[in-house]
Image (tube, rainbow, N blue to C red):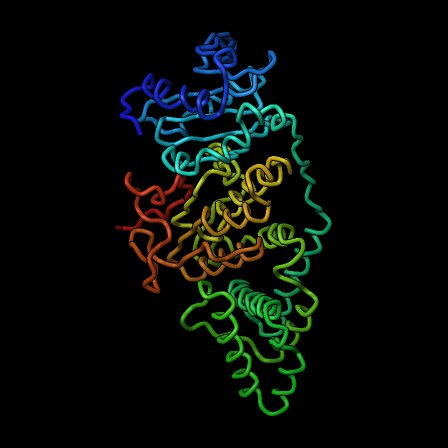
Length: 438
């Protein structure tokens, strides 16, 4: 890596050799300091794009070089403006240490296709980058059509919401619990159902808890039935979801109510088809009494969550942390946006990247979205919320000002260090608690 001190150093020592020697562009295709007409309110101003890559008279890539001390993410707004004005299908931003490759699709949709550090890019021989914007590939890449996003099925979402409400009512009617306590028990039953489903998928001999098993035990004694329910719960949840299990959290429902719930849950799959619709339905189902006084907290309203995610421009290259995540509103909204970006990437581009939609979404769920909350009920709610979207591993219970959670495990996000590319995160979205001494 060369010694970099200025934006000019980045242009001459990183950008120029990258696009000429590595990506294969000749001097005629590389246009430096290209004037761009910009509309800033009522004013028209002319700015300069550092480099524009052209082919047969068409603009293909706008390149923005930044000082080594400036973060790449801070240049996205300006570079996007250049790309839209010049009708470039791609942009490339680098400060000499890190880079970001963006694709632009219909309705001004932007997708972060590749990001990382320049030294890592070098160690991978620039292969993935060259497959997308190399001189021999870029025309074909730019012609690839993005996938179309289907609008969510609102009728199905309403059906799932009614289903969750029906389960909640079964608990309230059966055991006369207040809404918050009933919601706690609903979360445990959904977790039990999901654990049985996951274990059954990996082992056909696994026997899930059924209404018949509980009713048979009730015939002997109610106490025995309760013990069978909780022994099963304590076995399957830590096995299926080690990070979601708590040290001691019994199902505190009468066996008769549990039997009724198991019957209703029997045809319902927590983790297969319509995962995103179930997640939307569950979040919408959370009534106001569970979001406010019932939980002892006031969670950020969804319109404000959406506004903040818009303002922060949550993207596929982000690693996001909410250190006071409550029911997981920021996590879910960020996941929705990242998942939509994955869905937009054209099939050919995915193939060039050596990725599948499933692998990218799995990376988002396991490596890019993290939540922490100290309050047990809020942490459980966020976990269940995220589980219904397809994953609950990202939520931990603990004090976010400590270095480890309440079980003694280190948080997966560590404080940022320049020497460690895997440390820190790119974005913190949170509504922190206020009024505390700490």
